Length: 224
Ligand SMILES: [Zn+2]
Image (tube, rainbow, N blue to C red):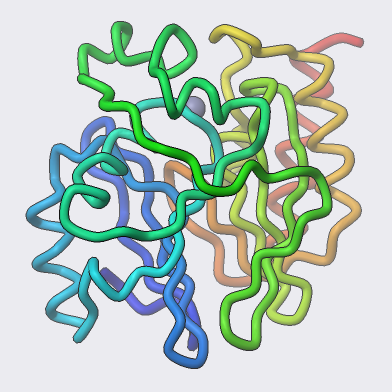
């Protein structure tokens, strides 16, 4: 875990794992994405070094159901009972598994987990003094979301937009290239300083420039 802002801890993804983020404010902890779960013990060790514990995490939010982001959820719920928040379009896959998890493609088991809150566009997830706004960003998957914190200008972007001009694959089930471009256009209108994507490096400044670059490349590669 690296503390990358006053309120955000970052665990860079290893192998297939997604990046894992923990937003902390006024003693409240919210985890965004969980990785595959393969490195769960290491994650717990890392948390311990920062004086944190899995049991302190009040909520887990998934940016989408792909197993590299969601596989660790079952391990967390085995020893703790955080509230699980998932966009409504992918809640069924989290609760029942199946094609959309990509467990077969990755060869990584997915254990279904109960969803407590089915998120909708515009929902606000409060974390202490911060508020994470749910933005529906279909394209990588139909139920992909980003979370935007307007005060700190942070965007948790899942697999919709990455740093370095990259953006999410659109060839998985429910993926849609035109929707991805539309989602990037929408994100490009946000004022983003910190870009916290689901894979690759984070950006701790000029996040909006990264999004603009990804939009430019996506528009070049994906014809309308
Ligand atoms: Zn994905």
